[in-house]
Length: 620
Image 1 (cartoon, rainbow, N blue to C red):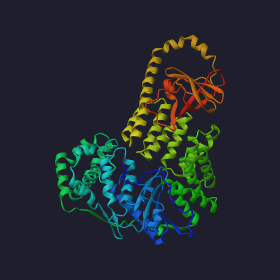
Image 2: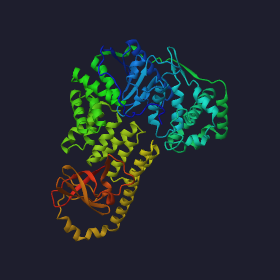
Image 3: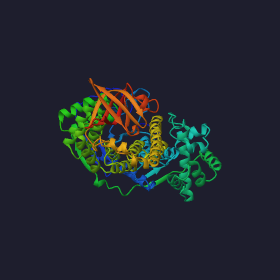
Image 4: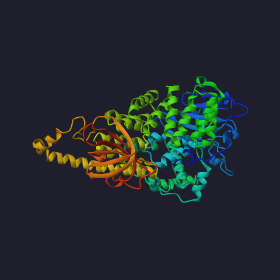
């Protein structure tokens, strides 16, 4: 659970002039792993880039087994003063009496923003930035890392000070210590098993016992390791990564008697002084290699507008984007941000147009390629657009092989089209390997496995995804799909058994042979339930006359005075989804489709057979 600003906040409009009376000077400083955009000066921009590169180096030393680079860029907005910072920070923090932020980390699937004041004051003005940067770097370990350790490390590294000659790590947290001294600690067996569904994890109070105790235990173990020259946390992490033991059993094996550990932790919290670490400044950061360029007014405004859009200050972003496009009609960033705003507003046709223009303006922009394809898929693009959609997804992967969402969408695209399923499975695996904590990628992989008739494997993938769910909504979504996959696996096994028992009969059944001659090979479903080859069509209308002969299903769609007959030999293979609402429970196609408005994807039949249904998107 992110303690501070990592998710997009509710939309509240605020006043922000689309253009300033006096143009500001904006600079871009590119280091090896960060892009710093600042309205201060070159010296400040270089210092901020150097600070983040050194922080990255600290993590490289601290987590040698963790890949600390991600396919999504990190853009640092280094703002010179409070006035300009408030023009960009989340709306919720503008109200009187609210906490003054020194910085924040804003995560999104395609990019990551850091907003920071270069004149911020306080003992740890960038603690929230370092806290969320820790989570960002540890996201690939989310599959096995328990929440207490994830949050404990984030709390530990948030108290980091980067000076000219050294880096101070793990300084004590007065707020956490005060809270722990005034309240009873959680038993360690409880702390170790807190997960996304736990009430301790969902406490909104920043000073919760869970966070404070996670920090204290992590700090205690880090200091103990240093003094005793051991590798307790690394050994604990290795056991968990092997998935052979749970967090409590692994802790007892590595840390020893948990009651004694609890007693030692309580004593540690009551002591009067604490050890922290000083490291020499990173020597592998070559600031001479940083690339500096001045930005035009339009370019600087485009960056601000994009951040405002991702920060949900839409009323401020739109006029700024209009101003940018007046000044620079070919500005790629402005086209992308316009596409993003329209997409989030649900205007898919408009969003697609903006991203399509962005692709044409700069074919080397992987984000534009990705969003054009993803929105086209979401909008139910015409089959005639398939080649362009697939081309854009492959271009996004080629331009940025570390960008997991593009692999995921290509897997989903091929799965929807029931083609290249082996490649689709590999694409889904690549997305998951790039971002193991994203349960959506695992769901995509499970869906592809179902199309490959590998229901048992799909069930195993979904059970793993269920353990990683981070919210009740994710848990419910995965559980519904898991139930569906388990039923399909049972039906698949029953069908295989039936086929084994009747194999001899089928060989001599002349009646079935006679029926088979009435249907062309091009239109008939295969024994495995594969759809016929033919053009994919889409229709939006009302579902009627639903009739099941499990696992087969037949129904009609009434649209604009026309009725289309549809069927599937196995409704477990139909890709069901919803638009505008969340189902209250498991979907039963035989009972829940009749009378519903829906968009249906189907394959035409050239014979007298009903068309073959591929996907059903139920509307509110």
